[in-house]
Length: 247
Image (tube, rainbow, N blue to C red; front, side, top):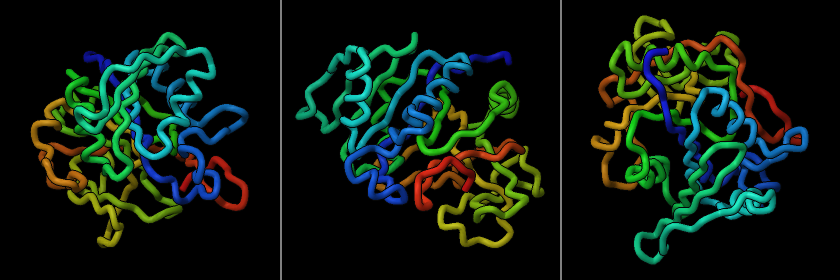
């Protein structure tokens, strides 16, 4: 790997409706798996990637995340006055990592949450969802990102077993190529892969993001690519008792 990714962003602000009733009082990222919050498994993986700076983009039940770190002797320092911009920011240290919490309004969507981190991220970065994890060849992901001068390099589960509905069409049906369609509603025909929420994004993405209250239309962004992931990805989901399983 010739280029180093220094920053990671984790989206952890959604309502977690699939995990009710537990998420009525908790952020879904904090669900305990084998006695540890699921979020910590993601943080461990990020550390293994050699990344030291993590940005947690929070919204719903944000303080259940922050309270966990303060309860485990991580001193949290607040940085701003929420009345000035509607977004609170604080930071802490954990396991030799620097973690910044960016607390956004609950009704913010993915687009607006990411934009709230614009002033803090000065280089290309890793983006992850807070509710699934997968073994990733991180070096290959980064190398492909720079090799193809991509705007976004997604990790794509091939979904050969049709365990879930796919949401992506990759050029020529190969999972190491250009994303032709990114269908959030999963209605298009011939979809052939699943975005599993582990991607490298160019810092230039902030320059093309809209100012309105909608998610970025990823397939309309020039330079979006996907790289094949063969391993099953694990998701926290509610089926009677909560389990770790792929979608």
